[in-house]
Length: 199
Image (cartoon, rainbow, N blue to C red; front, side, top):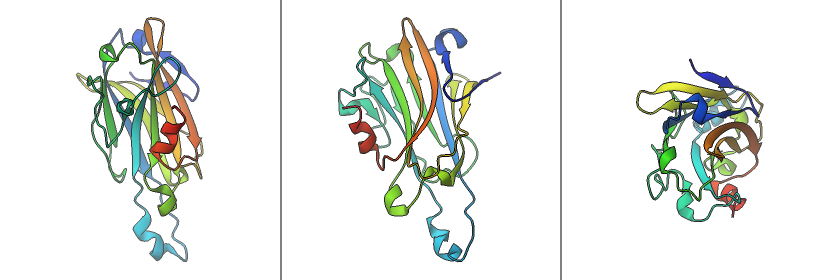
């Protein structure tokens, strides 16, 4: 049975998964129902929200060393394929995960200490969109061999007017890998804005 985490909670992935190294990370969200008001007809065409999940691979100083350490829809694989993004979902509609990432913890280079999972809304400024227009957001960790769900973090805060989220982190702690449920919203309008904070 999957472990449900709350914001701020940390857990040993190594202990809880019996040292499992091949993980599938699923991220999901749904568009919230838009209120139909006087301008409802005009707004109808702009309800699709394109959320993009990305992974920042940080060194022990919390920095991104090279652009190859940013895994997103434009760079789907890390150089040694320890992190593989399975592709972009443009709307968030439908059941199940919207985007998935495969991670092999045994292949993560020794100079990488942390994986940060972020989600931002593509073109949010132009489309006037924010995370208050999203519901049912979550991240879950699965055994990649059988898709058995090991842990889940449902984001329950109000992220109205926020345009990016740091969802979770997987990080080294001695000989272990740990998972942290973060759930912090920011006003970054693009992935490049987020990346700049780690340069």
